[in-house]
Length: 165
Image (cartoon, rainbow, N blue to C red; front, side, top):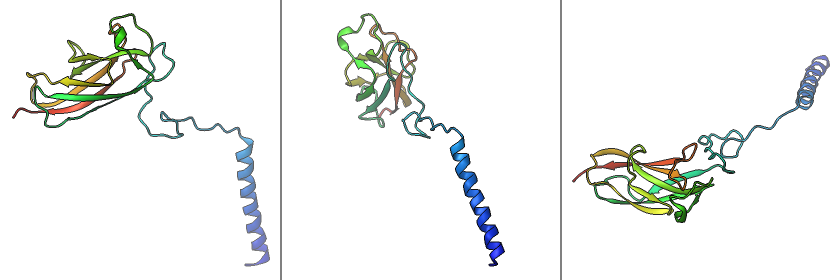
């Protein structure tokens, strides 16, 4: 390589580095906003809503000991894992308090009489004997002491496959 070409390449490289350094330093940079799980650029599910008047987001996850080969009349044990909400069976039916209450369990959409009303983190739900075969949703919805749904609603679902022998 000729000395002239070497000097030209060096000058171009130095200018590029200088441009990168001054551009990066001269603009105010804002750190990326954390995603729902706290990490920048997170691809976690959407943020969980906060109940109006509550200080922290409420998270709810429900697991069931059986979801396939469920028969009408079977008992299913559910486990709730929640944060930002206190289950309190001593106040079911009392005046609503932000961040506290119980839950209702429905087969399908909320409405009508729930299969279970409880404030225990572990409970047994009995599948109705007259339920049709097929895929169903066991829906757990957090409620205030006065039985009103949280605003916005907080719920979790477990899919069940029900069939008769």
